[in-house]
Length: 440
Image (cartoon, rainbow, N blue to C red; front, side, top):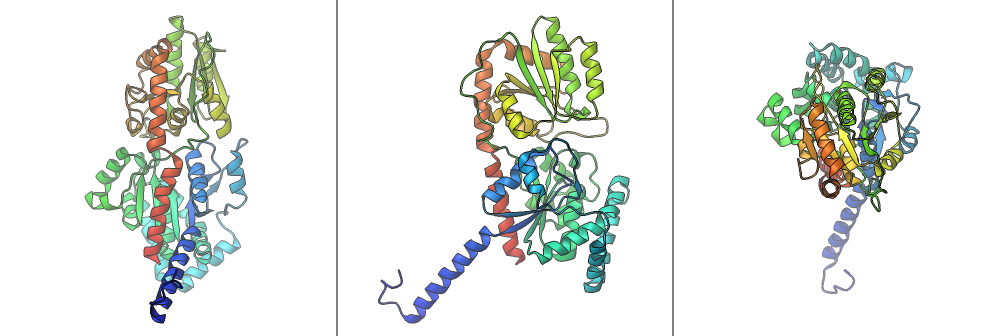
């Protein structure tokens, strides 16, 4: 265009070219932004929200490097996660390269190295889990910090506010690379040792719900408000799509529950609700997808209730398999409960997946769940640990096909609007780039 502007001076033309070159360089640099992701374990089948977020970020031009604190050993792995494992930076707790990295930081800045270790131990003192974990991960995290710095990582993002956020805190202290973390459920609600320090040094913090945001503000004070950005975990709304047509008429009412077989997921109350419905003559075909420590207890409960053949423990499934199972379901149930030790869910991704697929949902009225499941609008909410109320909700959906359809349609619209993984990843990417520019 400058060639057509004959009246411009040579200096102005040169300036125009220079500004264009700088703008192009900035756009090119944004496309090549390198972000390190830290999580407790990878690849963890139940943490599809981390996997989906990484894939969506890479679609948007962010190079994601994986630095898991531990390698998860599992028989069933999502195919997409298996591919990421090939380039994940798994590290032992101790090795010769890790020892060399300690010497590197000690030589470069002994005060910074000692200060980072002291801040970590002081912040976690009083929590055996956090204190021992901090000691255990410190050497490998220092090594990861050195690798990140050498490879030009511009930002570190940590999933979970416990050990991964502590790792981000250390990396920032040792290298100056900005970090952020996402606060989900039990990682935030059970033990908040060192939360103030992690929030204070983070570039920003991502509570996955307004409920979690309020928890952090109560713990850290109003001064933390400017650092908190609620960004929902999201799901792939293209993978989880509504079926083309209603399933054919059938005698059985199909109910699915998806999640680790653990107290916090509340499956025992769903089994009891199915027993109550069976007593009324309502035939329910219930499938529990997932694996966990409560499997044997649930098997005994199912047998004692005479529901063998009616309730199936389907074990672990991949994302694609879950999507197929949801397509055949009438209802998904998330009967979450707060546990005696303080564990509680954030917003179960299983609810997002089902609602994205147009499946009606029933969920417990706790934590951030009402921010997704609006009672009588996008699903039905029941009090936690209330099997009769859960049975009543399922009975309504069994008896009223139009209600199931209405809730399923509204649920899909809600997820597409507020819980789509590409939108969530886009919000994160914008913040990563902004803080990387500030740090630079």
